[in-house]
Amino acid sequence: MLLRSKYILFTAILLLFSPLYKSNGAPTHPDEHSPQVIRKLLVNAINNGKVTDSLYSKLTAIKNPTALINGYIGTLQALKAKHTWNPYYKLKYLSDAEKTFAKAVIGDPHNIEIRFMRFSVEHNVPGFLGYTKNLAADREEIIKQIERNHYSSADEHLVKTIVTFLLDSKRCTPAEQIKLSQHLASL
Image: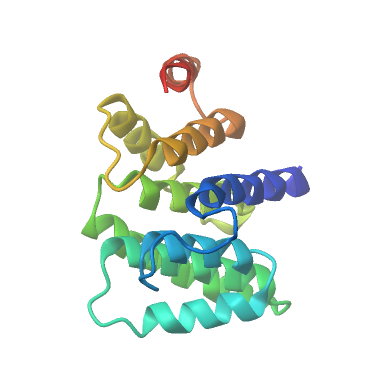
């Protein structure tokens, strides 16, 4: 079951970020701190600890990061936990990620991309570790913003990916599943 959950997370991240680039693989936006560039690097970071560490260093060096940048940093901290073999550091990085995600959510509480990143990390962390306390709140906020068509910086493909992930997560109520399925059909 844990392997399937990891597969769902990695698939969601790949689907989430892959259409943002031209067919030759070049970013469509030249700014190295743009969400499009960071998303591409996050895809590479999933299975590469060096990319994770490099992107983490670049993003944490930003003075006055936005809430979205903090969300990316939280995701990278969770990936650092994935890449380390040391149980102490796995827990430390997850704890750091939890704090960073909280800061990101405080900075932009209605941003569905931030909420989705935290939801997907918490969905894939074993429940006994205690890092899953925001799943319901994030799910509810994401659904509320989707129903309002308030996507922040998210594009249609990102929203489709988020809705599909929520449905596949099996963490939605039957009523939420119906609403999400209808919204997905309308996109």
